[in-house]
Image 1: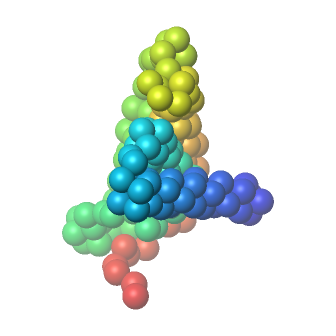
Image 2: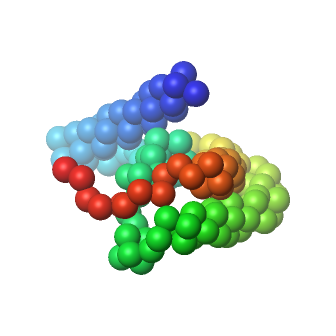
Length: 159
């Protein structure tokens, strides 16, 4: 599991680095040479989409997500356990239901490509399906943890 986390973090970092370099090239070409490059705009959008969805799927742990914990902190341990089970069931269930239609759409988009770089839209939108799969797996793991009584402590802010 630690190896997967390290690979996921490294890949996410590489995506962000490529995005940053693309911005530098774009800024230099546009303002330094007064010659905007159309491919940099397109690549930046694609890399931004990948960076956000990849990070949400594989890099940001559940405990670092933004939560509204007023009800959570005032609930008993048993109520928290049920809240976690029901919440993960809803999120994981909705993601699981969305996977087939999302995959069909992503697979359908293989026939189209980006206008400048000619990258298949299947590759552009693939991280959304990966996010859905990750949500299903994380939710299943969250349900398992709640049944075991893990992760039921206060969600108070820590600095």
